[in-house]
Structure formats: structure tokens, C-alpha cells
Length: 114
Length: 114
Image (cartoon, rainbow over all chains, first blue to last red; front, side, top):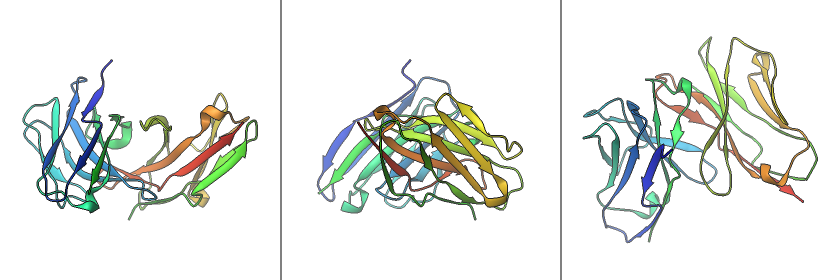
């Protein structure tokens, strides 16, 4: 049962560097999401996708880009990392076009930007 | 706008004590769902319960119980006879207007001391 797999699990970047976080799901879910988790703030939605080839902005999209070229993969990119992007990033997927049925989450990526 | 408030930042109790985690929400919707998730020290997010606003009966699952009171916009979570393994951060969440995402509380860190 792979579910939702995120890579890498940990990463340290220097300010200005770029990187891509990969999320892969094997449940044939249409909907995928990227959240960030910061201390004392709960989770905030960065971008989401309602299907292959589609993406949309969430609550905190600035500084991030995403792509959903294949149904099973949802990539989150940081073009020029900033210390404010130090966070734990969670990918999630859901079977239906709604959060009402809950998500399946990946195990998270801890990113530190120095 | 939707909002979820978890006023208790951290709670510490001794094993076998009962503990209640508070969740207060705001929504304009007349029907809605509420969620609780658990995040143990390992970091993953684990779905605990989804509750429909139609149903105000208390929910019980083993040592866990949930008290939903629409009149006070609260959806509180009680752990009876707490155990060290219950130590985690617990999040309450509410679907956004669009239903594509969840609005999360800031979380309550629960520490169960042996």
C-alpha cells in the first residue's frame, strides 16, 4: 500500500536555489494538493489540481509553481528559494472533487532554506 | 468566511487521565462537515473522524469520543484514559467554501506523560 509518496523527505537549500518536490499517488485519485505546515498555523493550501493537466492556486501560492503532467504525479517547484519557505510540505490526494471525504496524505517533506 | 480555532496550544496530562481538546468553528454554511486529524511525532497526518452537521449525536470510538454542539459551533474531542501513544498534535478542520480544501485549526499539541 504505497498511497501517497513524497520525495525527498528532507532537504536543505541555500537562498536563491531551486528545487522540485515530487508527489506520487497510486490510488487513481483525480485531485491532488500541496499544503505547507508552519508552527502554530495549521496547514495552508499552496496549489491544487483537479485532474491531469490542470492546476489552480490555493491560499499561499506565491513563490511556488506546480505541474500535473501525469495523473499520478503532482510536482511542486521553488524557482528561487527564500528563508520564508522553510516549512514542512505535505502532498495529499482525494478521490472526489471535494475535501468532504478527507484526504490521503504523504509523509511530508521538511525543507530548510538557509 | 470559514475559520477554525483551537485555542489550546499545548496540553500536558499524566497517563490515564481524560483530556478534552477544543475546536470552535465559524461557517456561513447551513450544512457542513468537520474533521479531526492526528499528527504523531513521526509527522504523518492521520484521519480520525468526519462529522456531518446534520448529526449532533456524540460519536464514540474506543477511548475517543467527539461532542458536536451546533449551538456553540464546537466540535470537541475527548480521549478517555489517555495513553502515551496518544501524544501527538491534533487538528480540527472544516471544508472551505469551494470544498476543494480544508481550513485547518492551528493544532493542539497533546503530551501524555507516563
